[in-house]
Image 1 (tube, helix red, strand yellow):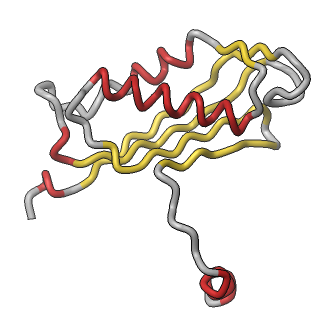
Image 2 (cartoon, one colour; image 1 turned 60 degrees about the vertical axis):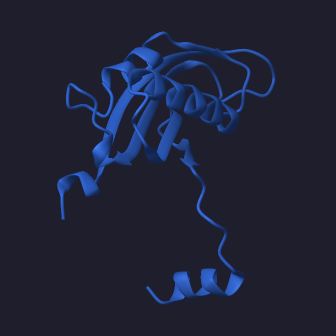
Length: 133
């Protein structure tokens, strides 16, 4: 098996400044939110530099801060779409298989976007998953 037949996953964690407005926003108040992003790509998607994409672009995206009136769920969806766009501009040949983006407004709460979503499981399958260890 050639290594180009593999997948590579980049993980990046950090913090970003958020100011919130309106009655239905992410978190109880603005401040420093945490993020974790994992991006799984095809191993054959490396650019001429040998990168899938420069993970510093993720940090730059969040470093600008966010002013939002979105819920955490919608904020994760919006940021996820914008980050996929950042990756596509960085390396148009990068084949993203999966992405997970977690946004945490405080240490007790977080929401995770998973793209693409997993197919739904039948109720019986869910029961088996939770009972057969």
